[in-house]
Length: 367
Ligand SMILES: Cc1cc2nc3c(=O)[nH]c(=O)nc-3n(C[C@H](O)[C@H](O)[C@H](O)COP(=O)(O)OP(=O)(O)OC[C@H]3O[C@@H](n4cnc5c(N)ncnc54)[C@H](O)[C@@H]3O)c2cc1C
Image: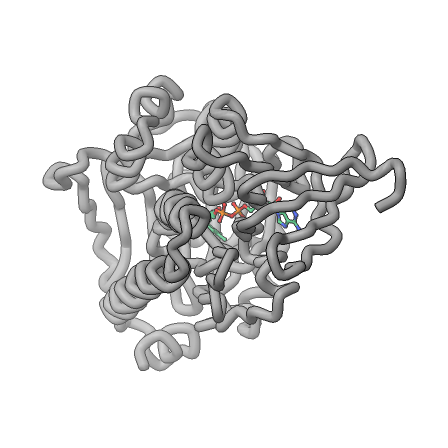
């Protein structure tokens, strides 16, 4: 270590301060000391705003329910879908014991969780790029670059919450097992509030993929198309203008775009496949959130899983620090169960759309 490199010693190092990393970080103090690092100091515009009703239980478990409510995210009352037939169907959350879900302001949500982690005592290094990490037989020794110079971090446990890149686990030799090639092209922008689909998530199946649309905070709206990266449509919808032209040919989406006077602001193209990391935990390390397993956005389960596994990884790290050598095995069993149930549901959802069973996108999902 040169004389300019600072040194910090903590119980747990968490790499990635998205929903999974921040959730793990806020559940460890005051019993355990935590350093949380992220490449980004702010939260960039990103897709992923439908939060299912079951999140309420996790907020309650973590003592965050009242604070979450005070954030004023918009309620989501259910889904409107054109799936399995050309007839739109509305499924509401009226009978859901957890009540309604939400369309969250994603940037605000991510910063809120980070803020709680810091308020509870986590050290937040941002921007903090992890340059290297190794196990010296007793502790992890990591080097990270920050705006204030390099820092060396010594920790007894590391949690990889770096999203789909799984940056720590992959550097340790773990590999992600991809189940499909799903990608998502999306646009968001200004849109007047309209009565049609107000407070509902909209999903529509198409010949070579499926649409998603939802209202966003601040009089805005998101629209996305999901298809496989190796199908010609993936290239066609990568251009935001072409995506909007294609959306306009759908009766429902065309009407939503026209009535709301949609004005394009942001766009993006991202991986959206299902994947599981192998392995996603070991003695003294755990992967949480998308770093451990990532979900098809059709499930709206990614954020819930980030909160759930962030909390579970914090509990497992705490058990490990208290001397439980099998903490990573218990954690692995829990995450494996979550992923197995998710796969069954996904097969069922895609199986309920049979209008294009001869087309590659659907054929691949019906076997
Ligand atoms: C198209 C699409 C639509 C989606 N829609 C929904 C939805 O409607 N509802 C839902 O629940 N879920 C949705 N999701 C999934 C959801 O967004 C993710 O599951 C969720 O963001 C996972 O949280 P995370 O904390 O695990 O990872 P992320 O949110 O990806 O956070 C990872 C963090 O790690 C940081 N990082 C990465 N590498 C490093 C490094 N080397 N060093 C330091 N920091 C690093 C990143 O900057 C980032 O802040 C969607 C996903 C996609 C792709």
